[in-house]
Amino acid sequence: MRVYVAGSSAEIDRAEQVMQAIERAGHVVVSTWTEDIAMVGAANPRDASAEERRGWARGCLRQVGGSDALVFLVPREPATTRGGWAEMAYAFRSQIPILCSGDTKQSVFCALGDEVELDAEIVPWLEEIARGT
View 1 (cartoon, rainbow, N blue to C red):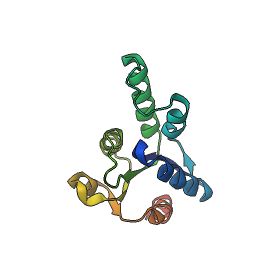
View 2 (view 1 turned 90 degrees about the horizontal axis):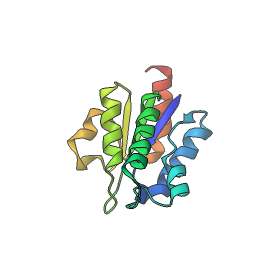
View 3 (view 1 turned 135 degrees about the horizontal axis):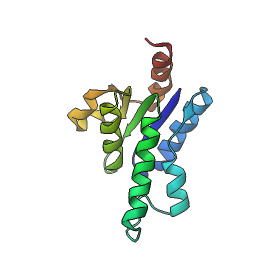
């Protein structure tokens, strides 16, 4: 399965750990935002042009649209995200299966997908989706 992992740049280590677990399970992680942040040095550089920011946003949405499932790592306070919520909405609109992991009670919108508290529950969920159950 092709999986997009959305999350907060403030929790980039968490995202990378989840991405590695997904890949170890034999799935393909299509999201590259963690790599982009490492290259650029920030999730949303204040000195980036509108063209650069638009390109990054469109790239993320292309990756979401090309995925079989979206895993949204709902950030734990005090971390926040704006991009993750937008990516989840795009997946919902595109009828891509969504799993929200973490502090899902912070928003009613997490109920639009499946919800789990622990990131360890992500790979088993992906296995169920892959089997079509």
